[in-house]
Image (cartoon, rainbow, N blue to C red; front, side, top):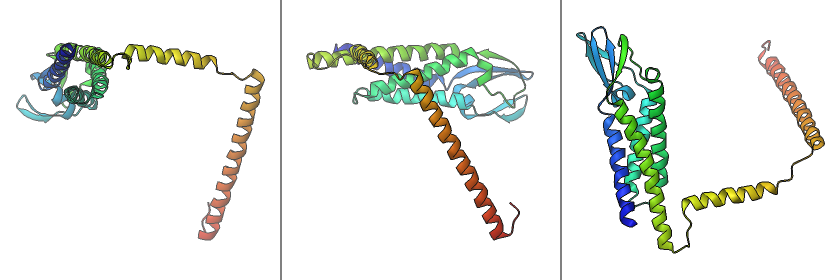
Length: 228
């Protein structure tokens, strides 16, 4: 089981590295009247200088792609730390999930997240973006499997002293259900009464603050000789 855990950890690192690497290759091509302009994920995120039709233009930065690049890089970092730090697997899964969701959203609305200014865009073409999307999904799936396998290996080593992640989640919801049953819900009359009390107190405090503000404004106006 330890060997299988290491294999999945290595796969997670490789897929995370592959996703980060793909950001430096053309993901899209912006079609202009002067020709097609390829843009890498890094260029979409942080801007670049392009020569189009003999003119040098500076492309705009895209915050959403910058976010996707950062979470992808963090996923790579924490997946690498999984070999030394036990808690890194959870962070790796979290950042992998954020990267995957970002790529899925980009795939759903590609033109909304690629800022082609100041390029005179007439169309867009996919380059390596479909590959990056597949890698992002695979990285998340493998990171989850790696976390579960590693956790199962630790449970086996503990000889029952530790529960697996699915078992801990099931126990959490079981305890949550039992605690919810102990909740005593207030009656309708109590809810109405307490709501009225809150509304009355809000009105009193609001009137007090308004009167205080009006009085202080008039006082400052008298001191400074201003018509407030």
